[in-house]
Amino acid sequence: MLFIFGISQGRKLLDYTKTVICGQCGGYGRYQVFMTYSYFSIFFIPIIKWNRHYYVQMSCCNTVYELNSEKGKQISRRESADISEQDLTLVQSGHRAEEWNYKKCSSCGYETSENFEYCPKCGQHF
Image (cartoon, rainbow, N blue to C red; front, side, top):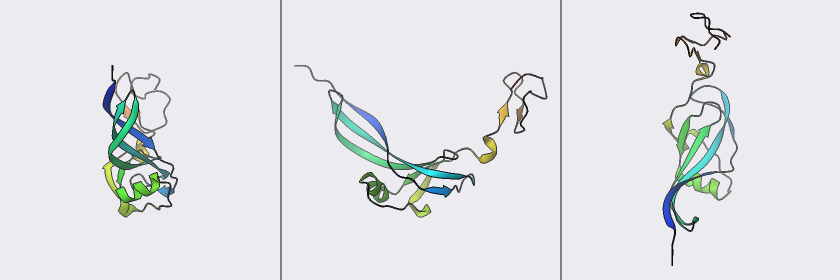
């Protein structure tokens, strides 16, 4: 008899929507809540899940926060939960608002945040 089993990592997007002003970039964005976990599978079917962590990613600048596990469990059970700043711990800072329009010339390496179509240094198209 042949068994196919393994241990792997998973990620699940949770159903939660809240629009906020981002503390990192100052932009208007919304929370995107997801859960990461490890799981054991047999014949590619997940059997046991463990090591669950809940995260919030900002839609405006992709900053990632770790969410309080109790709030994360409430959201995963589809219970009513409100995320406040006290429930979040910064994991990875995203792009600042001024970096979104940042351009770098592939020819000479000139960097600018201006809305040029051509590089002012070498004349190549951005």
